[in-house]
Length: 406
Ligand code: ATP
Ligand code: MG
Image 1: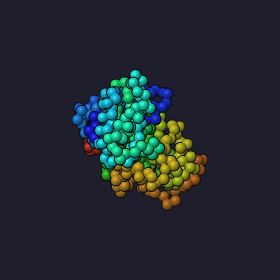
Image 2 (image 1 turned 120 degrees about the horizontal axis):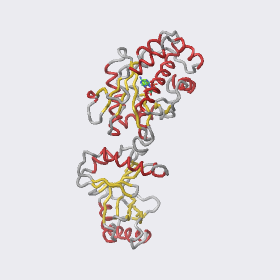
Image 3 (image 1 turned 180 degrees about the vertical axis):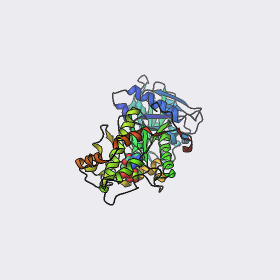
Image 4 (image 1 turned 90 degrees about the vertical axis):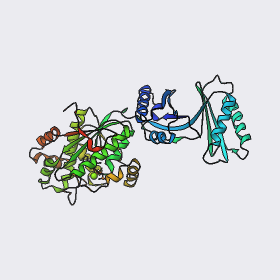
């Protein structure tokens, strides 16, 4: 079928009373941003929807982009015609004739939004359905389980005829649910957690802890590549804060409390993340934790680790099984990069038996014996290097950013 137009439906936020207009404005901005290369397009917002007039641009290329825009629930390639019975009947036939496979059953679903149209929905179902049946004698009506649903919407500005509904990313437009920091390791989980958080409308800045020179330049590049992928999802510049963790991590290895090293490291990471979050105006910390996955992700561990900060800890993957996380990582395209075998700071000095049930008082006591811990944390924050990743540019060109607070 020659597609004239795409009708875009918004996500769940349209049913919430709050700030609907604001959400809709943001989603239109986002659609314009992601479709900027297609210069001939006309994008308009009307009655809680977006209509994209193709003007000859490729439906395939545009639909591939639309599927991944956060806040879009679904879209349909549509034919638009005049709200006039004969024209609607002809357009309905064209849409049916253009289906990739000939169906044996169908039904008509009519929405008459323009009440000045002379026939009501019931009548229109018969008038259009009868016309299609006469032209396609093998076709039958099946109201309960039709193979094809021929949808017709009679709107004040014209009538839309379509059958296909393509699901899209869903969620909220980027940045409409506030700002958080993402703890981005080089692993499989945290990029997926970042994707899910952004899909829910959180604006993110990423924080990565490295133990250079124990961790390699390649490990750093890998994280930059992952951050680049997250940046591409929204088409806006994305900040990646690189924190040197070498000194802190090394000091923990000297406590003679090997089973607590990971607990101590996670607590120090969170303390630094909270401070960086405050400076960026972020009010949440997103991690890729998944319950029971490793020793630091048992409930007793997460309890002791989380007690060191006050910001809410958001864990989108908390109940997700590893297999499902891997599937999501494959779908969003981060998996191949995540499994590159470069050492992360957490895979260095891994203790033989990390505690799954640390004691908060003991952990606090051990911390109090670490020389200069508070100063080291201050230094790590002060020496943080911020990269600003620009979508569409190669990761190697990521520059140390001019950050407001540096
Ligand atoms: P995987 O289990 O596939 O390695 P992961 O790295 O996400 O994924 P963990 O190493 O168990 O899993 O870490 C748990 C969470 O802690 C991560 O999801 C991430 O949010 C945070 N984290 C761990 N290491 C780092 C790091 N070096 N920099 C930033 N965040 C980290
Ligand atoms: Mg990891």
